[in-house]
Length: 144
Image 1: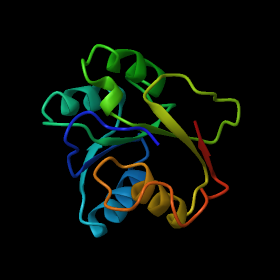
Image 2: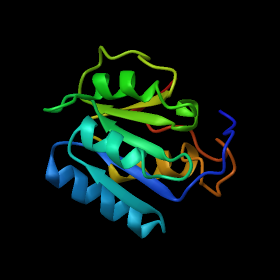
Image 3: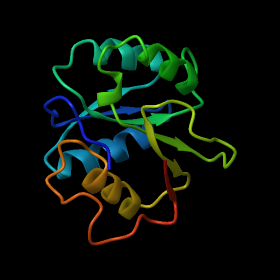
């Protein structure tokens, strides 16, 4: 499990161009006492990251208009503390491999609510859960 170098925030940045997915994930994040921050493309996500004070978990769709997830990850490199932004890519493509040092996992679509809960419990730097104890990753999640 990665060690985070900065104080984690309680924010989860959700980047997806499908509004139903954004709403569903925002509800799950809110129910867990975390603050969802929503973006419909990579450019919006970068603007929002510029306003944050501290690292946050990023749930990132890879295929979006305006700025896709791949472009977002390349742009993320310019942040000094980009390693403090753990990214979970959300995709239906099984051919996606580790594409950036900030990517810690791939959440395969379609995913279940339980999969998202596991990600929030184990991969969010603000999580209070013991690191990777108690349960194995769900089958829809590939850890890198």
